[in-house]
Amino acid sequence: MPLSRRQDLLRALPYARRYARALCGSQSSGDLLVAESLRELMAVDDPSLPPRLRLYQWISRHHAEHGSSGDAAGGMPPLGRKLLLLTSLEELSVNDAARVLSLSPEQAATILEDAHARLRSCAQTSVLIIEDEPIIAMDIEELVRQCGHTIAGVASSEAEAIKLARETRPGLILADINLGDGGDGMKAVSSILQHQDIPIIFVTAYPERLLTGDTIEPAFVITKPFEPLTLAVSTYQAVSGGVSLN
Image (cartoon, rainbow, N blue to C red; front, side):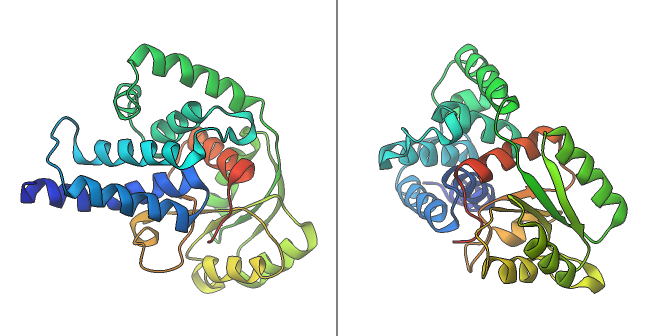
């Protein structure tokens, strides 16, 4: 494989990890899929797709080969789930997502329409928001409500987050990483997870810092600013089939 394509594959790794972790609901399982796919891609020179799309493609194939293709989390067919993640979380066009999954654009559009309908009717949950910026917290509250969820509470510091999680026992936590003077969102979540099993989505302007694969990292990461659909897809995947840290 030419050096330039190897470099392109390495640059695509953070995005591949985000997709694989969200697909599996687990850092460890997702990163294993990425490593397996990367090893095989490094051994061949296949220019039929750009490196980033090729990584998504092999991750999707290995996910199905490992027996995950039958796991319709929350009633969502696997292809619909993958299309939602590729087009919302990874921001691919429908045509590119179709190429990743070896579908025609028409097939992808039909499956995606059905997936959106299922998403709108999915079970809702209560969400604890951990965010120190009041205006951003208000925006996230509105997005969460647009997704049909209820607000368990809004915390601006580590201590407040731990207290609210204990009192409200939310079904999902949406956490910023940097809480300014209020501490660290990841530390707050780690403390909460010692006593409660709650799916977590981390929200950050710098997702690549949480997708290195070098340490314990989140399974679900979305990038600020984000669209309502991105939040809806991520919360669906986290609540229906995911865990936060693995």
